[in-house]
Length: 251
Image 1 (tube, rainbow, N blue to C red):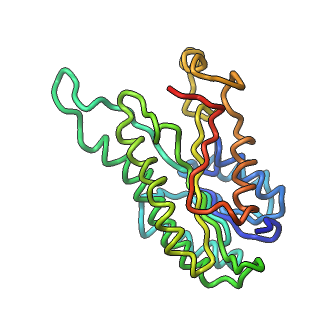
Image 2 (spheres, rainbow, N blue to C red):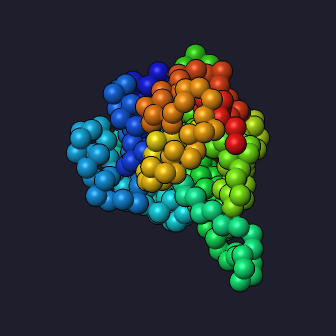
Image 3 (cartoon, rainbow, N blue to C red):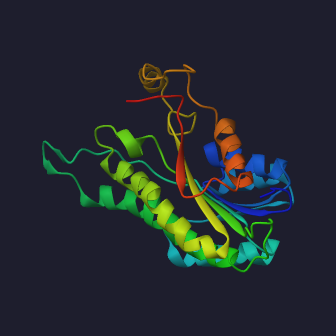
């Protein structure tokens, strides 16, 4: 699918991987709806990107808010062709601690935001995509890209909720691809390893994690994630799978 002239939603688009993705899509001629909780950063990004960008402050776990936001994108830009599910949280907690079992909410909140919310967005956006005219000779109408993680394959201590959510995104890609095939809609995932994002704030944390890097011996750059996402959009043979983007890092 050619990116120029298409309409994209980028969740978590006000910072980190999401912002780099929004910038790359705009630079390649797309119109982009940025969804994020951070109103100040979201408005700042839209001011920088111009009239082809719009911002919605949203909790992606709020079903009604997401439904309204999808309709707002269609009303503003006329269609939706690309969905980049990037928003998420990580709340590492051990199963038990010295006081007893840790709170169930610490697990379910991550599942709700990192797995249930992306699925809800997928189902609502896929319906709008199904109404599009085909944009390729193959009859393609839309493409969905989920953000997984290396933690889906080898999560660290305390990452059970995050690993479960990201593994869930990987597992549902193929059945969703099969289900949406008749509508000309693809779905794929990107599983980044160590990347420069706002979640890594302490230099000592970064230094400790660097020992697991293979090559290049550094954290990934947000623009490298965005570059792969653009290729997923362009390459119609990428469907029903998740691509690792981790520089061979294994924990």
